[in-house]
Image (tube, rainbow, N blue to C red; front, top):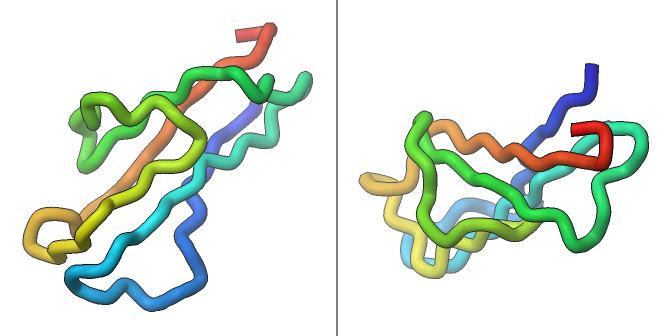
Length: 77
């Protein structure tokens, strides 16, 4: 079964700095470059986050800590 995972940047998560997450998938056939993504934070959809990467422009641990998930589809669904 295909799955998606969230990869964090390799730099430390520093309060006030930007932080980028990347959605990776092992689906076959591959997810097309023009695919739309859905990002969630602790189960709630993040409005406007529809790209392979999601960047938090100014990290605030009190607001941004938690679980991030992403979903996308390929031609098989």
